[in-house]
Each structure stands twice: as C-alpha cells, then as structure tokens.
Amino acid sequence: MTVPNPLRDPQDRRLPRIPEPCALVIFGVTGDLARKKLIPAVYDLANRGLLPAAFVILGFARRDWGDGDFEDLAREAAKKHARTPWREEVWTRLAGNFKFVGGSFDDNDAFDTLTSTLDDLRASHAIQGNAAFYFSIPPGAFPLVLKQLERTGAADNTVSGGWRRVVVEKPFGNDLDSARELDDLVDDVFTGEDVYRIDHYLGKETVQNILALRFANAMFEPVWNSNYVDSVQITMAEDVGIGSRAGFYDTAGAARDVLQNHLLQLLALTAMEEPVGYSPDEIRTEKLKVLRAITLPGDLENNAVRGQYAEGWVAGEKVDGYLSEENIPAGSTTETYAAVKLGIQNRRWAGVPFYVRTGKRLPRRVTEIAVMFKKAPHLPFHAYDTETLGHNQLVIRVQPDEGVTVKFGSKVPGTGMELRDISMDFLYGEAFTESSPEAYERLIRDVLIGDKTLFPDAAEVEASWAVIDPLEAFWAGRKPHPYAAGSWGPAAADEMLSRDGRTWRRA
Image 1 (cartoon, helix red, strand yellow):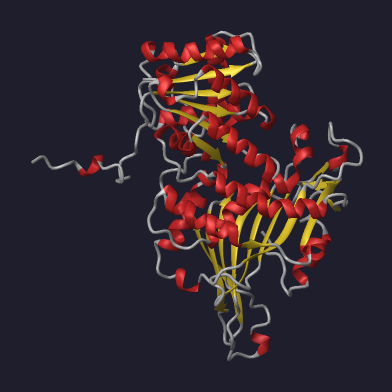
Image 2: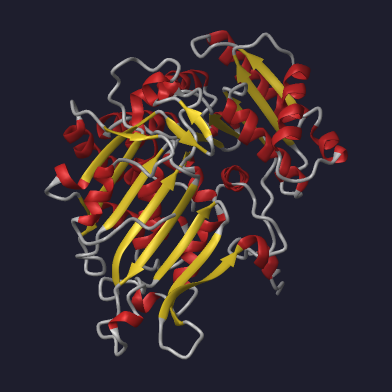
C-alpha cells in the first residue's frame, strides 16, 4: 500500500500552492488599479516563484494596441510599483506571455476576439482553458461585461474545458436592492463558487493576524467579551483627498466606499466566534452571524455623524476643500467622513459599543482596531497616583507600521507609587525577516488556486448593505458637518463619544 506524501495534502499549507496553468484576463488594464496594483502583484508572484510556468496575462481596454504595447506598459508598471526587487531574468520569463485585445464593452467583435484568443492559448500556452476575469472597471460596466461573457460562452466552465472565475471589485452594488440584482446576474453567468468579491483589506497580513491573535492564543479569548471589554474603536483614516475619483466618489461617499465593506469586515473578524475549522465556509458562517447581529442606535441624530472636509492644512501643505476639488458639483452633500456607533446583539457583545469611523484629509493615514478594556473595579492606590491611568488597550495596527500594541498600567520608577500607561509593541518589520506580501498579491494567487477564505460571499455583502441602507436613508437630504482638512473630523464625532463618557483614541 502506497503511503501518501503529507506535503501533498491539500490541507497542508507548509509548502506554497502553485496555481494550475491559467490566464488572468484584466478588463480596464490601462487604469490605475491595474497599473499600480494588479500588474505589479503578478510580477511579485513571479518573483517569489508562485506562478505556474504556463501563465498568460490578457489585457482588455479601449486602445489600438498590439501585444508588445501592452507588454511595455506592464514592464513600466511592474518596475515602478512592484514591492520585490527587480530582476531581469524574472521579467524575461514573463515576457511573451502578455496578450492584448482592444475594444469597448459593447463591442461584440472585440469579445468574440477575446474568446477566440483564450481558445488559442489552450494550445499555444497550454493554459488548459483555465481563466480568471478581473473587473478593474467602473461598477456601472459590470452588467454589460457579464452579459458579453455570457453571450460568448467565455464564462462557461463546460465550454472552456477548464475553470472560469470572475473577480469583482467593490462596491458591489450601491444599496441592498442593486447588490441583489448584481448577485443574480453574476450567479447566472458564473456559478456561485466561481465568483470572487474582492475586499483588498482582507488580503493584508495584519487583518489575517486577527484570527491568529484570537484563536491561536489562550490569553486573549477569555477576556474578549462584554465582561471585560468596554468598547471597540475601528478607524480608517486617510490623509489624501479624493484625487481623480470625483466621478465615482461623489455618487458613493465614505459610507458606501469604505464603511460598507472594509470597516464592517474588520468588525466581523474582531467580533466573530471561533470557527470550527479554518475553511472558507466555516469562517464566512461566523462572520455572517456577526453582520446579521449588528444594530443601529435608536438615536441616529446623535450617533451617526457625516462630515465633509473644508480647506485646511495637511502635512504642512494647504489643501482645497471637497467642494473645490475638480469635477465636484457645487453644493454637493456627499460625505468624506462617517462615524457611527454600532451594537452587536449576541451574548458575547451585548452592551459593548463598536465605534467605527473613516475619513479623508485627516492628519495621517492609519487603519487600526482598538479594543478598550474596562478599568479595574477597585484600585488600592491613592487617587493622585492613578489620575493619568487610562483603559487597558489592545490595538491591531492594520497600516502603516503593521503590528500589535498592548497598553497597560505600570509603576513609574521612583520612591512613590505613581502609575502610568505604557505600551508593548510587536512590529511585523522587526519580528519577521520575510516582508509581508501586498494584499493584491495574496488575493490574486488565492483566486488562481481557488481559495475563497478571504473573499466575502453574497450573503455577507447583503448583510452589510442592510446596515448601511438605513443610515443612507437617515442622512438623505441632510448636509454633512464641515471639518477642516488636517483635523480628526467634525466636532460632532467627538461629542458622540463624549456623551458616552469616552473619547476617540489618538490614532
């Protein structure tokens, strides 16, 4: 009897899994996302030896290009934005594997050419009919491209003779109804198992480390509940403005752009119960329970704050307000800041407020989860010795300076018994010799190997919209609070916490 090699067990992750021969088709390959993230991530995967020998990148965009033009663009993008060192021999292996099809999304001939090109690649590059379609395009174009893929049979696993997968960037819809319509369409064209809804935050090492921190250690889980936790703050702050995204951003706003996906996913990972195992279905089951248990406060007037940045100073430079940004209509009421108090109605978290906030043109870029613990019920020390003592905190820093901080009280050296908060830090850059892969690098590889652990499913998306839609309905017709660029947001957000006897953690 032959004993199976344990290193070939698909559940064994000690050796990296290499995708099968395949193609990655990128729609909108000339856009910022493709140039700055997707193509560099492909190069980084090649540099780490994580791509199959038979691999093709097929670009689609409205350009009159040949394959060589696309390869030149890809080389420039990879050289400028890749995180791993540039090695000419790596690029030489990729060169010749770039194909390009030009056309618009309503051009039947272009999609016919795309389909025939994929068919030809089965023989010329031995990709066996396997292909992933990446939608690096505006959300409004999703239905048109999906219908073209359906018309040509390019999305059909049976017709292709291999697997066909689709990667859809956020936002997935702009409310619950549109998300359901898009779910129905994409599931009609592709099978449900072949749909990957990408939230790049879930590809970050520090986000994945939330699960390791909680469930691989015995010291945190006993106090990870309402008996010991006072509150949780989740912050995603950006120091930049909207850049060139005016057309999208003014129709979306901070809540739809960030709160509905990134922040609610961070909340779900922070609050979820321990899964039975580390599989996509088991993890999504526990996240979904949390998302469906989220409740909005009854008093939205005081517990849901929108803001819009005015002119101010960021990093020593004067910047325009939102209404002065290019292509923003005068009088726009779109929010660039959102802060909301949420509850989770289950036994573990009942009574613990989760404060989430996101904003643009804040003092600095930072994303973190801060678990604030209750103060000790009794302190035997003199009041003047503990007047600066705050809450114990466990802070997971998602970006930048990725790591974990534990904040607790300690005696100040000296003859007295003065107590003060101190911090212990774990930094990824210092603890590990290997650099963390970029989020898109991890997620593209997961798509190509068929691992859906880090991808929200349709039920999660719909549960998130069920939280956001009532907020949007409440905010409709109301003007956001102005705040100066370079500040930490409108005063109303500080007042929201002060009414509860709390303050925002200084990120």
